[in-house]
Image 1 (cartoon, rainbow over the protein chains, first blue to last red):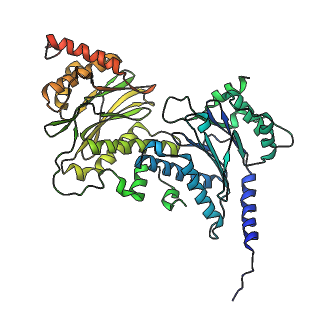
Image 2 (tube, each protein chain N blue to C red):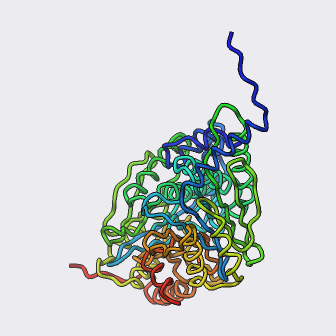
Image 3 (cartoon, rainbow over the protein chains, first blue to last red):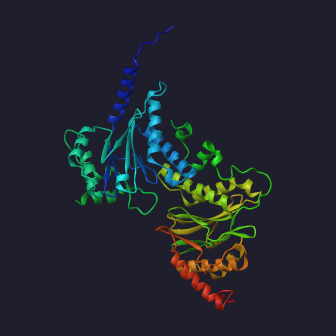
Length: 232
Length: 271
């Protein structure tokens, strides 16, 4: 009979966390910024087809870093959950908080169950309020912990220098152009030598309070991104 | 933790997901399939017509329950996505639920796939939903929607009609469904021309609904006392637009005024 080596729970969790963290740090950062009219998502993503930022529901947006197949799986689950709830009850009954909870439960269970490897993903779930004070942004990590984000948030890749840039330069109530320029410069600070992230490899989307439809999520097309970046 | 059904890869269809995960929430699922049913509300007449650059859909506002008028201001034309709408005739409860499911179906696909369905794709999905209701239809609870969309690829407005078995056929010019549809269609046949402007097409639709209400007891005419007028939707390259109530009211007032002198409406040349 083979005897399993004893591994302390602390060590087991630490190993799993290190594994997930390494996977997440490999990619580029994604950032979310509150601006005057809503919530802005910016990711460095050279692919035009494989999105890191998506619409979940009328006022709820989603951004992710890490392994594509894993966060895509969670994104689809989120869309299904939101659409099912909106269909069974009412569109107004779909909230970011319940979605964040469902994600947290799922990620947490996968992280601590021995059967599966932990998901190498981190997520933003953002819900647009009717007033700026009602905006809610949640950051979910690979182990299922949830944090509230205020003003701006960064995840994935090398986050410390990017966060530092936001801490030094962020101001509330920026217009869309300024918020986008700030996010782009911040994303460029993920290396020892700051670089300029090319406009065409930015994936940009907004939850726009001023949009006249129920669905407030909108992808910002490349041409508009270029315009906004040049509008200094 | 989210159940496995939520994390299964492969399907971009909300109704497929609903059938598997929550079949009790499919339209018509809860009804015991025995005998005929009295007291269900019925929607009546819908007309649609294309014009250069778009399509118009209009519906009267009456819902009936047997010989009783159940509602005077029911909404029967629904936006289903940015470039399409559905008008419903038949059992109102099932039709509204089916329309809601169809709306979610289109939006769900759009979000999961990151692209919109083709116009035919949308029409086919609706046909599948209608076919799913066949059991109910055989007990007299039929749902017969009319689907209109602006096709971005072709740059034209399109109309699709269905029967209760989900057979879909495309109408190039105009079409009507519901209890007053025979009269509305006859009326449109004489009024419709393929070069009408948007406003003239709306006027033709309002005329057709007036004729339907004239000869079909279940279709409601313009209600001048309560200021309730047909609900009109216009879809063009700019997307879906609910035609403003004030405009529809003005057109309806014109139509009614003209009918005071010629009760049967405008006449077409003999040859």
